[in-house]
Every structure is written in C-alpha cells, then in structure tokens.
Amino acid sequence: MTGLTLFFEFFKVGIFCFGGAFGMIPVIKDVVLSHAWMTEAEFYGFLGICESTPGPIAVNLATHIGFREGGLLGSVLAVAGVTIPSFVIILLIASVLKTFTENRYFKAVMSGIRPVVAALIIHTGISFLISTIGFDSTFAISIKPAAIILAITAIYALFRLAFKKKLSSVLIIIISAFLGIAVNMIFNAANV
Image (cartoon, rainbow, N blue to C red; front, side, top):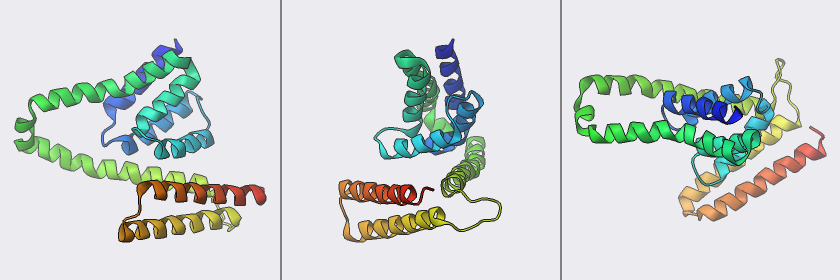
C-alpha cells in the first residue's frame, strides 16, 4: 500500500504543480509532512543535498523519499508518479504547440501563472531561510544567524567573482562545499 500511496501522492504533485521543481517544493513539503515521511528539518536538509546533486530536484526528492518509505519499488513508483504527468503533458503540448502559442487565451493563462510560480519560489526561499537561520519571534541575534548571513555574503561574493573571472563550475562547487563545512563547524563548536 505504501508504494501506491507514494505513486499517487507524487502523481498529484506532478500533475498539479507548474513552474519546475522550485514550484513543486512547497507542495512536496506539505505531502511529506502530512504523511510524516520526514520532519521539516530532515526535509530542508535533504533539499539542500538535492540542490547540489545532479538531476532535477523533484526527481531527487521523490527518489529519496520513495526509497526511504518503500525501498527500491517505492523509489521507482515515486519517481514515476512525479515524472509521468510532465511527460504526458509535454507530449500533448508538443503535438499542438504552434496552435497554443498563438492562442490569446493560452497566453493569458500563462501570464497569470507566472506570478504564482514566482510567489511559490519566493515563499520556498523565505521559508528555507527562516527555518535555517532559526529566527524566533523576538528576532534575537545569535551565532547561527550571523554565520548564515556571513555564508550568504561569501556565496554572493563568490558568484560575483565567478561571473567576472569565469571560474570553473567545479571550483565553485568545491569552494561552496568548504563554506558549508565551515558553517557546520561553527554551529557544532557553538552547540547551536
């Protein structure tokens, strides 16, 4: 039964979400938390890993959650559930693409969907930042928020340098990994 649940839950995510993986993240999070497949902290931790590994984030999340809950079969079913809707929709759209792109109603729908997808992505980023930094209602400053803000500043500087000097993406990943390790060491040293 777990395999079918995984398939249908991820199928719903795949069929009703629009705008790519970042638009899917809030919905996947709600599904995962409602079924108690992960805690919110575990979800955000694995989301960070999914963003740094190759492949689509939604597929990586489906693979991990499916394997965790239903083994290899659960992993296959969760991935199938999240990818089949996109595959079928793309096939249908490709067959009538020219007609759709010139249709004024289709253009109007797409114009209405874009801000919704942008809002979902911004919501995900803000939720992730708040849960990572751990602000409470008093917004008290501790070492954890300071380290996160320092890491974000370092990442911003790294990307500025990367675009200016055309650094290798492998070098950027290695530097980012060291930044992550440094922040983690700061948290562990401060027992945060």
